[in-house]
Image 1 (cartoon, rainbow, N blue to C red):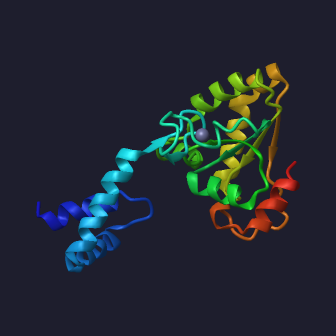
Image 2 (cartoon, rainbow, N blue to C red):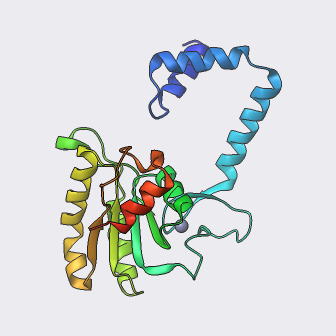
Length: 204
Ligand SMILES: [Zn+2]
């Protein structure tokens, strides 16, 4: 296999990238300045070495200060331990955090459950179950599902509620989902701050 093919196959593994786009990336890199390519390689390597995944919420974070395995949000004792917001991915968490509308904890689910059981699921259900069990003893009262407003998102919430029901019953936890009144985009990542704020206020 040629180097060009090998590189293309690596880019095809990126989310949302097809074979044609992957080729375009490769040809772009071939035509780019050496300094650009060198910096790209350095930054990818550095990010891979220095960005860790939080052991509690599973978001990626840079380790500058504590050197531990907790992100700044999870190690912040001033955050509200009674509400846990479940999001699909890091970019959604960033969007909610930027809106300033949520002061509780987070959990990054890692995607949605595929409809009709097709395709593989990478959703962190066992980890979420463990988190709820643990935090129910630390004041957790409500779990907010902040997933995409589309069939896959709805299906995932339904299945999560079923799977988590025993733990919720045992610990008197309440489930809620985001209000969709003002929903413009289907994904939190692309929603503006006011939309996120109102969706959180109107959760039910
Ligand atoms: Zn964290």
